[in-house]
Image 1 (cartoon, rainbow, N blue to C red):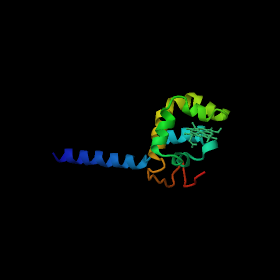
Image 2: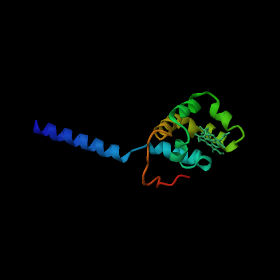
Image 3: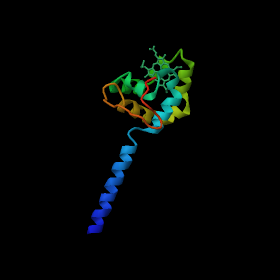
Image 4: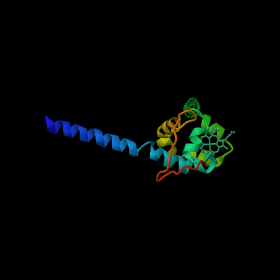
Length: 117
Ligand code: HEC
């Protein structure tokens, strides 16, 4: 019995630790850095420009994003890349989690250190 309690505490502790280490989706962060940052600033900055409903709207209205970027060939290239298509849902979740009224504030880590642009 005691063993079971110790093992469960260990699992809970490990879960909490790994949760603390991953406060946001770093894959989505890196994808946005690669595809969108040259024009939109760091992914956290970009995410904060609009609210969660707007992110849903832009991502889930067919053709909307392409239309906005019509005269931005590099933007269109990013949107048409296989990387964007593969990670579109992760990016949307990331942007929503860090959107305008989300209250998300990100401190320093290996990917990001408090700068906005
Ligand atoms: C070549 C530069 C460029 C790249 C790369 C680019 N965008 Fe944009 N994007 C723009 C510009 C400029 C606008 C503003 C268009 C306007 O207001 O008419 C814009 C507007 C937007 C908007 C509308 C909301 C807003 O903030 O004005 C969204 C959403 C958006 N971009 C998402 C993305 C995402 C996601 C990526 C990466 C996959 C991306 N963009 C890559 C240039 C770019």
